[in-house]
Structures are given as structure tokens and as C-alpha cells.
Amino acid sequence: MKKSTYSELTNEELSSKLTFTKQILLAFIIIYFVIVAILLFLFLNKNFGEVSIALFVPIFIIPVTLLPLYMSYNMLRAEKKSRNL
Image (cartoon, rainbow, N blue to C red; front, side, top):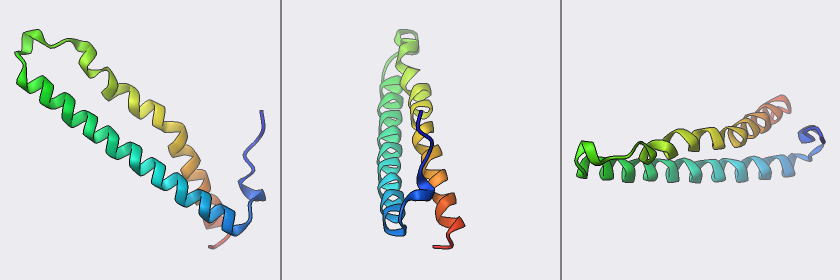
């Protein structure tokens, strides 16, 4: 597996990649909160006995799927900080 090559990027490429990753991460976080709001609405509008536990699976799965993107974002920030940009 190829190692991270953030140190080989130019300053412009690094800034561009950092901005893009930040925008994608922010978009997924907004989508996550919209999903949580919809699921909460569905949960509160039904009787508590009729709600399936499967309704709450996305709440626990989505943060786990965003973890690699968040780690990549942190590595990009660390590289930018090490270059004093």
C-alpha cells in the first residue's frame, strides 16, 4: 500500500487538497445532522412500541465511515502547520 505523500505536494496543491477535504467533511457532517433530525422526527411521531432498532443504525454507522476522511484532514492540517503556511 502506498504511503501518504502529503510531504511531496507543493504548497498550492496542499492548500487546495486541504480546502477540498474540509468542504467534503463539512458537507458530510451537515448531511449527518439532517439524517439524525429526520430519524428523531420519525421516532417521536411513532408510538415507542412500533419503532424498530434498525432506525438508529445510521446514527452509529455514519461517524465510523467519516473517520478516515477526518484522519486525512488532520494529516493535511499537520503538514500545513509543519510548513508554516
